[in-house]
Each structure stands twice: as structure tokens, then as C-alpha cells.
Image 1 (cartoon, rainbow, N blue to C red):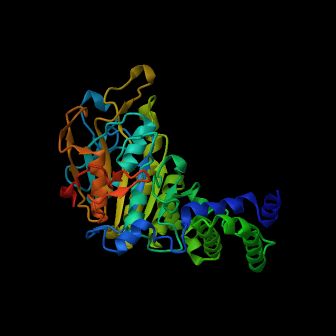
Image 2 (cartoon, rainbow, N blue to C red):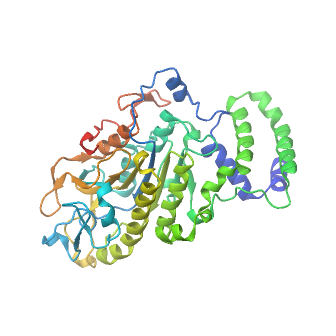
Image 3 (cartoon, one colour):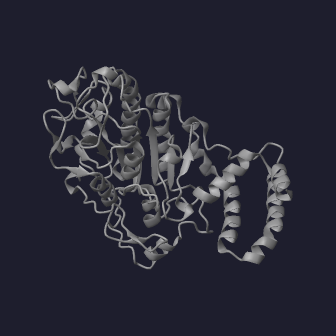
Length: 434
């Protein structure tokens, strides 16, 4: 009770949430957060990092299962196409849906992978598989790609997290069995800045510091008795969290710093503004930013829903590609558009023209970061049912991402139970994309 009363006087619940979150997912559990045991192995030359074509990743995730036939794997004239129209792009032979007129002008930067294949047809399992390359199990949690990147490559800006998820919540990326320091920082609303990161008005910096010292004194007896390294590390993280609260790097989360013209170019919705935030973050040294768009589970009224879902992606993604290109950042930033699976070629008439889950064939995009744009890779049959050329499994897709980042695909890291795991399981990179 004494501790609870003291904390209530110390600050708001939101303030405690911020500092606790920073301790778990933002600044790590050591005074030098990138020096995990795996990063130490890297320093000793045990992690054989390769040359990288990309330094950062902006990972746009369409949660729910994006229909390939209604976006990037158009089948004009096929019964499975339905009413969706295909339009030409600035890349010869590359078609996109009628809902992507802006993106059509940037497809020369994009490689469309129309031969994606997954073994997981349920949302939780498919999402987990797409993020980790491993099937969802009850006995272990596997790291997502952002955690692998931070673990092997470390941080660029030590005052900022290496991994941020915008609009996705806890259901998306995970640190898995890696240290809690590799937990991604979640950002709900990209227009609100980093929530709860300012001191309350009546608490000065000196008073705030004094309260932290008092709190440390109260915890000292417990720490001295148990002498757990994590307790000392956690206290140091509180100090780092306070420094971050006064750091100019917090401005990277404030998209109000951008001109209205730039903000308008991305669109006013959360996805577009999330893409703008992602650009600001990678500009400041955040390695991996995931921007999530939800609502793609179009079991009913698929075509009506696509008319609502696609335009924000069209605007946000096209603005992101143009902005990165203009700033000279596209060459070092790998831009991904992914989803957990596609939708059935068969249109379900009794569900108002809907499409169901379909993991056997779907589409994803890659751009920048060494990827050769202006083309499609892989092929499905005339109705979009089966992959008939250059199949790309989920593990292969993630291995391609890892290859771009220079992460060693064969290097084994061990879970607490001693089991070995690799960055993309048994995936093989699609080197033809580079």
C-alpha cells in the first residue's frame, strides 16, 4: 500500500504505463540495450552478418486476408474476377485494381509477388506464421522479423526503439523468446505522438528526479535481498525513460512537425498517417516499423468493402514510395505490403458477393531496399486458384526480407528450452527479386 500511494503521488496511471512500457519494450533491460547476449555474440564475430541491400523496413500489413484477385493478381475476363476492373500501370505488363490509380504511377518501383502460398488458413495462425515463419504453438513464442533484425543488427539510434508497430496492438509482432527489450513499441493513433511521454505540468524535472530517487530507496531492501540483475537493470531503464522524455528524438513521433501539404499527400486516415509516421521514424534511426490496416476479412460484400479499403492504401503507399524516393531513402528502406492469406476465387453469392479465406495463393509487394521494381514474380492459373509458376512460401518471403537486411539465414539462436531456431525457419530467399 505504501508503494501504491507513493506511485499515485508520483504520477498518473498513464505516466506509469509509459515508463513501464519503456522498460519492457522501448529501452531494454540493460544500460546498453542493444548488448543482449546475441549482440554480444555478434561482437565476438559469432553472428556472420552479410552485406545488406536494405537498412530499414516499413512493413505495411493488411490484417484479415487481402483478396489477391481484387488488388494485384487481376484476371480480366475470368468468372472469378467479378466486377473488379484492371488498370494499366507505369510498368509494362503490371496490372492493378481500379482502386489503385495513384499506386499505378509508382509500380516501376514495386515487385509484385503473385505466387504467395501459406499452410495456415485461420487468422491468428496465418498472422503468426506470416510474422515469424513458424506455426503457432502453445509451448513457445517465436520472434517476429523486427525482433530478429534488432537482435542481430542492433539499434541505430539508442534513444529510440528499433521496432515500432502502428495501429496493430499486441496481436501483431512479438519478441518471442528473445529478451523483453526486443518487444516492439505499440503506437495506437499515429496522429497523437508518443502517448503519455510528457511530465504533468506541476511536476518539475528536479521534483520528478527526486521522486525516482525516493522510489529507488524504497526498493533498495528488496533489491539487496534478492540481488537479481534484472532488478538493477529495470531501475536503470527508468532513468533512460526519463532521459527519453526530455529528448528531442521524441519529435520523430510528432507528425504535426510535417507541413500540411505533406500530411495531405498521405491522406487523413490512420493508415496514411501511419505511413508518414513510419517515414519519420526510419529517418531518425528506427529500423523496423509496421503499419497495420485492418478490416480485410471480406466474407460478405467483398467488392463494396474493397471500394472502401483500397483507396487509403493507394494514397498512403504511393505517397510513401514517392516521399522515400525524393528523400533518397528508398534505396536503403525495404517497403513491404503483406497479408496472412488471400480470398477464394469463388464468389459467395449467398453472402452478398463475399470471398472466404484462401491460403493457397495470394499476393504481396516489395519495393526499395535493393528490390528490382516494375515487374511481377510468380504466377497463378487463369482463375487465380493455384500457383503454377515460382511458388513463394511464407518462409521464403521472410527469408527474402532477411537476405535484404544481411541477416544470416543458417545461424541458429536458442530458446530458453535449448531448441535451435533460425530467422526464417527453412525459407530460401528469392534472389531473382534483387
